[in-house]
Image (cartoon, rainbow, N blue to C red):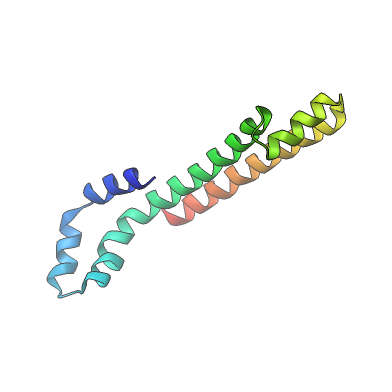
Length: 111
């Protein structure tokens, strides 16, 4: 995440940053008014994407023995409690869909 953000900062529009600097802005004002508006939409998008990946990975890692959401699902399968397993899978799907919907709303609002 930090590498992608650093690349975005390096590739931002320099003319806007120079214009803010030319007004005599301090370093914090330069960050707030020149860098942040250009980088913030990408930062929010990347953060939401990473959150989504973390949630999906936690479900998969739990299936292979790392604990978490997937461990409960694995236990349900081991005990042949397929109704419980189905409920867990449906819950995971609903949470992922809700996260996707929320992140799309946030991305639209930021851009």
